[in-house]
Length: 78
Image (cartoon, rainbow, N blue to C red):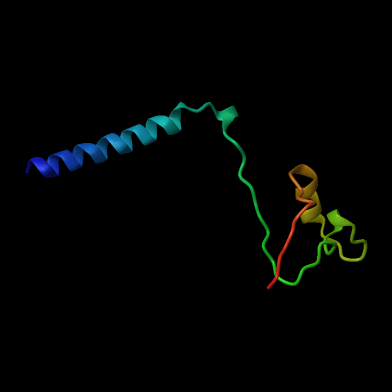
């Protein structure tokens, strides 16, 4: 029985400390979420934010202007 009580106590301490750590951060210091698009057969200039003037991608362009846009990506193929 002592083993089960120790396990219960450890779990309770872990849950309590996790909750307290989560509540201790001020709201302003919480970093925003991010979105990574992973797609196949898309060239680097298929979106308007990367220079395409034919295909209109207003939502992706807006997200790129308000956030971070990667411009140097390297791909190796075998």
